[in-house]
Amino acid sequence: MRTSQAAALALAAVRLAAAGENLLPNGSFDAGEHAADRWERADGLTSFFLSESGRGRIVRLDTLVDRDQALEWAKAFKADPTLPAPAKRPIPPDSYGSIGGNEGVMLDSELIDCTPGQDYRLSVDFKGEGKPFVWIKGFLWHPTRETWTDGYQTRLEPDAPSRTEWRTFSIGFNPTARSPRVRKMKVRLYAYWPNGLYHFDNVRVEAITPEEMARLVARRDTGKTQDATAP
Image (spheres, rainbow, N blue to C red):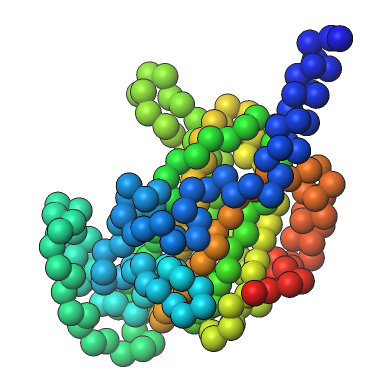
């Protein structure tokens, strides 16, 4: 058997074995809330790990926070994550002086491995004030700087979110199709405008077949990201 054929068969076996497995550790958030549990630590002012009846732990991002307070707190929290979060300063619901009207709020997963040539499915359960972005960011190793550097990104934008009802959205993606040196990736939950509360649960990254990838790409080309069956 030729080397290229063997490699293709090996990759196909990996794809089949990984199908349906969530490659993102603690994508349900139920294992804990801190960085050691595979996500950044929530700051208690703009980002939170909460429990919701019937779902377990979820992430909430609040963009209706005074920008100056959010930036001051981010600096203090980075220096000492054990500090208690401050009380939120009241601002008008439609204020562009909010963190949502400027930088937005984000929460990152840890880095996970990226298999060359593999197609993936990103999915998330969401409800909230507006349309968030759920980013996939890919990284390649920079040998001179000896660090991981940006090499790829795409995003899932829910096409029909609800303020009160959980809905599931997904896209297909392939980090190495045009950036073959990408070897790591992570998920970034991001909310901005309009001001308000954004809720996330069951974030999944799964290896999929080329057939499933083609279906998701065709659906995305029509502007649709909502799955037919929602929780």
